[in-house]
Image 1 (cartoon, rainbow, N blue to C red):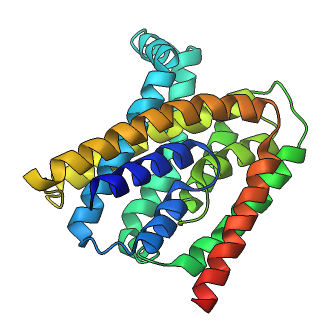
Image 2 (image 1 turned 180 degrees about the vertical axis):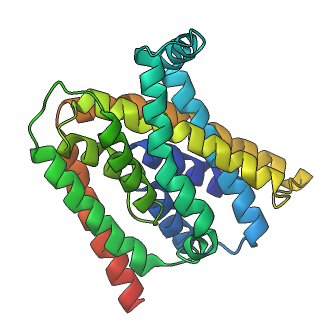
Length: 264
């Protein structure tokens, strides 16, 4: 992987991790266009680095909220911070269970499945359109809704279904306040990403070669900076009910991907 490709893929990951257009789907499409011939270990290493970068950008954007949560946890009381943490844990369970139980099956959906990505982007487009038309409220995420949102996050493990799009749309359709929905969506994924990164590193499948340091570093920086911008931007867009624009974008890219897969 050359330097320019690493930077482009890093920017794509940083933007699409937070914007509701599917980071995994766009990375698959980008790799198909680049004719990516990376061996699985190299591709996995780069993917882990990019996910670590976007997790770090989330921590930076929500550093105050995360600090408050930790302060509340160490009080060992059933306070608002403790309840929020329990909701985060509940939201993680579906993805953890499905990810561990069907790891090989999920991996089979990646690796050039452009047609699948196209159809899943259409599903994302429908979700975003429905959410954009939903009425705004002042409700917070409940324990029950956190589980349902977690199920949508597990489904979004398929390439082409946006994780942020699915979780934010589900939250809004459940009547959760848009800003609170975006905040919960971004915070709930941090433990999962860090856990996945740690699992991949401990598995021994991650091998850093000296020749990869420069492109990996460039991809990390690109994903981190673009992630910071996208995360902040997305919160404002959700609050202003601008999801229909992303719905149209996903529909167009999805149809292009389907056409590319069928005719090229």
